Image (cartoon, rainbow, N blue to C red):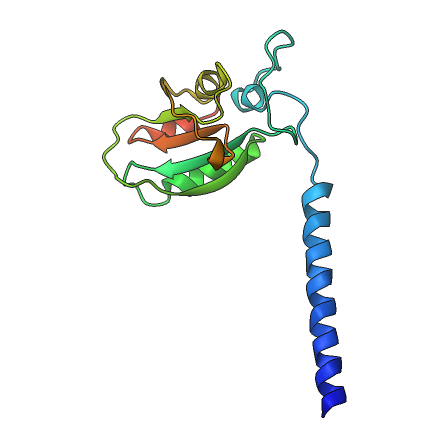
Length: 153
């Protein structure tokens, strides 16, 4: 009985280590962007004289928060931003559903970054609320006008 338990325990530990190694491999094998993800979303070539300041891995880190009240809005916008090369770390509901217009909030404190991200997706409103503990470049608070982000630019 003891040998069977030890064998089972060894197999479980081995599977856990394998899953951990596989998750690291999947994360690091993904190609990272070296160009401006915001320009890619806008369908433009990146500007050589004004590079977007990405995170250390080369991708802009964002979260998408649905404050429009439309079911599934955050998921749809998150999918669109991921296709464009953004690293969407989180999407879900905002604390309230009363926002009329979409807002991009600068979280990293990098001057002009949120404005350039907002311009690339057709968002007019930009704010700043730096929070280094979030490990984000920007937060998207989706308003009732969120469908504009899905339109080709």
